[in-house]
Length: 253
Image 1: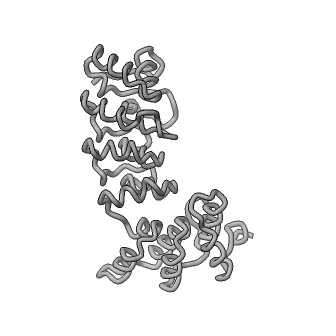
Image 2: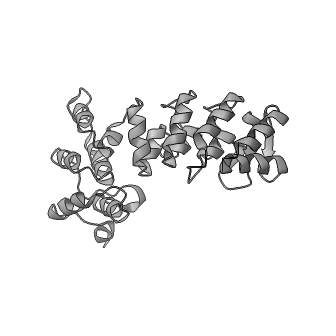
Image 3: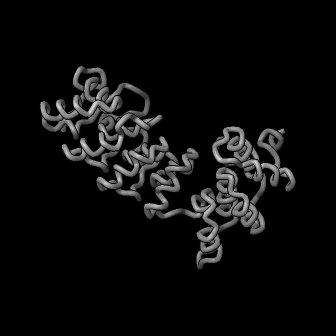
């Protein structure tokens, strides 16, 4: 397998073509360099292992939405790129994980159409599937698209996305969630701005002030989402205030 330092001329040329959506240049490079579609780009940066990343990772890399992204995916796969390639470093994410983290639904669809495993593990958040990354980073369009495409949801992911029927199935199922699981799902519902789901879980014993990711309570994460206008969580914020919820800084005082 061809391995390229990120600063050598061929690597710069092909990654530039990929990021810029220059399909003509990309096609020429792929023709001139057999095996280039499966090349690994190695960078001297923290967390990047010796195997680097694939060109499909380059397409999906943050912030995503490269010009001609879906067509670039198709061109690379047609030339031999592996849609299930793994990042080599601190985590083992596939290109689909990265597309989900970038909220790039077009590239996500192209990768799935090319055979990417929608249930692949390796997410930067807990080693889970692409849906774990989408939910964790608040990339809602990608998250719902993955569900539309058949992605399985954990209890917490279902709560985060407000899939109340799935949440109810988890709670009433044979393996009743433990109190800490209900609380984590509640935190997720507040993260996702899902009022009905948050109310349902609080009524079933969720801890309203449990500190979660980033030292944030459910109130903190709901307020952050509302301030970012990422999910319109104002109704959740107002409800949490009525319930006497606290911020992480108030709890630590």
